[in-house]
Length: 59
Image 1 (cartoon, rainbow, N blue to C red):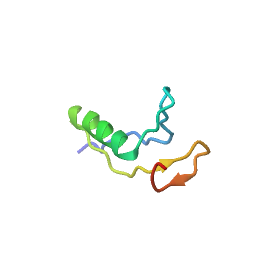
Image 2 (image 1 turned 90 degrees about the vertical axis):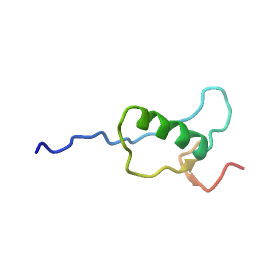
Image 3 (image 1 turned 60 degrees about the vertical axis):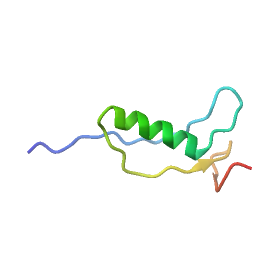
Image 4 (image 1 turned 120 degrees about the horizontal axis):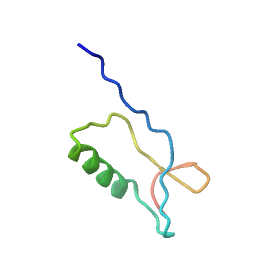
């Protein structure tokens, strides 16, 4: 059996309209996109500030 070849994501997503983007809003849209393609995602998501620092929630 051929081994699966995948894609590793390493980057940040910001909005271009100045609005905050919550982890929940992004993850819902991302997972919906992935599932529509018949793919799956293994990994994690977390929010960051404008400097790339991990934050618990949008304040």
